[in-house]
Length: 102
Image 1 (cartoon, rainbow, N blue to C red):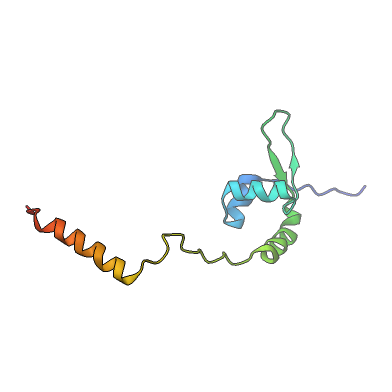
Image 2: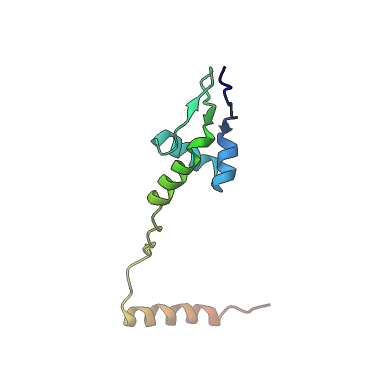
């Protein structure tokens, strides 16, 4: 008779701790198919289990999928004409002269 080896499946929380990521991010990876998982829940709230033998392939997929975050563009007001900027500063300073501090 051949002895079968059983191993414990990981919960999503345990895998998130191993991968050093948030639970939310891990659930997104599960939903997108990057992380293979089985839903063992009978209710509407999912309860996923992940086979620890899949861990090397999961890490490989994630390292290939990781790309650097795009640089954020400044989304402020358009540049102001230097002459207009000078006039605005003069008006602000004029208003401050009448205000006493302290």
